[in-house]
Length: 227
Ligand code: SF4
Ligand code: SF4
Image 1 (cartoon, protein in one colour):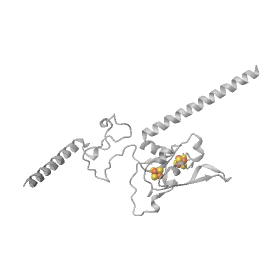
Image 2 (cartoon, rainbow, N blue to C red):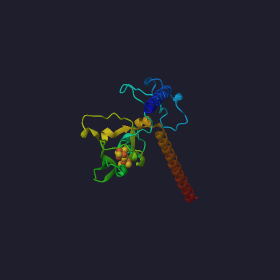
Image 3 (spheres, helix red, strand yellow):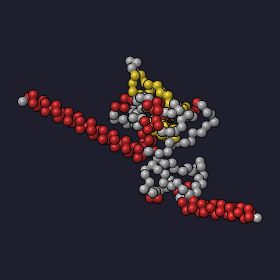
Image 4 (tube, rainbow, N blue to C red):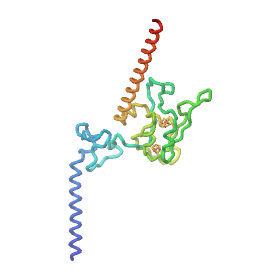
């Protein structure tokens, strides 16, 4: 008899918890998936950029018609970045940032990156890849490649809809499939992109200042010789 009473009490606690969780979730839920992504004013400004702002609540999303937004730091299979209008040394390589340095392939834990360095007509190696493959069936989306790339040439994608009926060829992405314009990267990773742009500007300013100092020194030397 005592056992039955305790069992009923336990079930009562479970039911109470279930309903309180449900009510709590309803309060947190941003009305319906139609409101997604959460409007900027509803976002918690104390949350660091790139972090999810709405992590609680009951969410019934009519996938695939509706999709929950992913945070900036979401990672799913890398892609390669190219600049559409390169005004720097990468212009010779159609703006493709990857220099085929091979660092990403070295740090990749499951070794799913394969790169072939490009060569010029003279047979000499060029700082660009002629082939670049990622086996997405092996990639564990750890993001190491993007972390270690010294040229901001490889970034993690947000596109997680890769399912297919085939488990081999369609999961090996080649250079053409991996390449995306820098605008795509900027849209997915606005804070990362802003940081890169600021670094690039600082470098350009430092270069310009160095060149100006060099020119001033040469002019001074020329003036001294003339005197
Ligand atoms: S680390 Fe960056 S630049 Fe080097 S091969 Fe990988 S993607 Fe290319
Ligand atoms: S995300 Fe990780 S596993 Fe995938 S290619 Fe990059 S380093 Fe390799």
